Image (cartoon, rainbow, N blue to C red; front, side):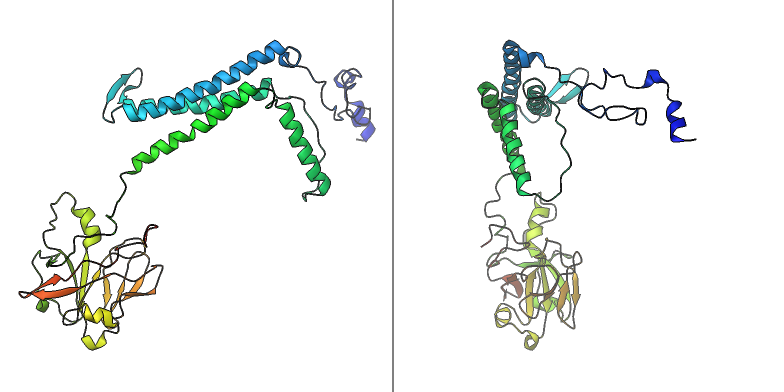
Length: 354
């Protein structure tokens, strides 16, 4: 079928009338009955022609921002005042935590009112004229930059942020208070660690106890080429804080021929070739458990960090950032004991570490 034939099949009553295409845009013709009619004429809102309506919208927006501020203050007050174990009945939800309900309700109200205020501001006070803009190259040419700045200035003017001081000030107040909710929540990260990360239960005179047999270790219990795990005397598995303490106190001992120890400091802190190092990997704190007796290397099974126990526990492979801390040990009354505590924090690095 020819182009003319297809056009003739279109009923005349479905074609745009002259009145419908009178506004800006392409004009429909017999050859192109579906031309872009352009944008419809702009219809003014009540706020555009009536300052009293604009004032009402301004007060509505300001009220929403004020409610947001009140809700944020209520969030902080609820966090401080409501006990964490208080349970209340809320119909139709049932019995729930009063603190969780109050925090969710107040924070939700604060965020919702900021959003609702911004939407109402945009729909009633900002300019709503539709502007068609031609596509432009991706690169920012000087004239494009000038146009962007001009559009920004025009947008700032049309938003009436300078004129509507009540809306502007209450919006700034709401936006400034909402982040306080997140700051208050930082309290639940727990108490400050103090010096807990720097200290362990190892100190001068504390005996080394075999973690498997729970018996004090003698030098003859450590055979050449073997790997033995130890803990400080007095630390029992049924202690309430055992898991937290052993995460720092876990120790591994190996016996190396003294002539095979390369590091002089390590040799001076050993006893008859028995060296004691922290079992906690200095990468992310995994327990080290694999030992290769020919090379005196220990391997962390998590990320394959490898340490040389014959050379100061230094890192020879993997992501660990520093050597394993060594514990100075000695013998007293036939048993192995610590001559001092660790000289540096055990485990992974932390930002306060000097």
